[in-house]
Amino acid sequence: MPSPRTPAPALPEWGDPAAPLVYVSFGTVAAAQGVFDGAYRAAIEAMAGMEVRALVTVGAHGDPEAWAPWPRTVHVERWWPQEAVMPGAAATVGHGGFGTTMLALGGGVPQVVVPLFAADQWVNAGRVAEVDAGVALKAGEGLTGRLEDAVQAVLHEPRYRVTARELAKEMARLPPPSEVVGPLLAHAR
Image (tube, rainbow, N blue to C red):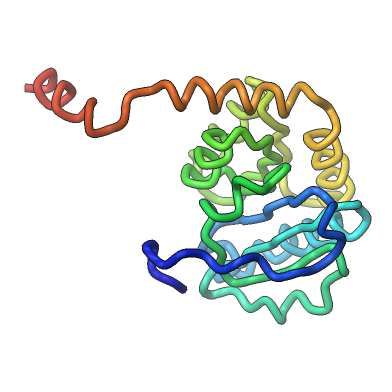
């Protein structure tokens, strides 16, 4: 993986370059667990039937070839810097991890959240759905069809995009952490 200071390379070419980009990431450890293979397979199969370009990342311990051959609408990588993908993404599919969820919210990108293994993932998924910045789904049987429907919804129902963009504007108005740490420490003392 490149260092955080290395500029991200341009995304490879696949699918229809005019199609909306959907970024799919279940974090850096899910693929290594093996028990979440169904979520990756469901995401890849769901994207196969859609007019999108889906970038699926499987983490450093995942093997992109384990999912080959993938459809022409899908490209699988171990890792790609999320901050390089998010500005061009029309939607994200994720597990509700804090980093991906907040980066999507901060970028105004509507989300489909499928919590997998940590308690905060269910909380994050519920809150994203509650505020209408996306859709929360349970993993398991029938995920492919439900995932396709949910991605279609966040791509084509304006309320998700509008809400995600409004939240991004609110987040942009927040003070940077460097301005908040000192007062918080003083308050704690």
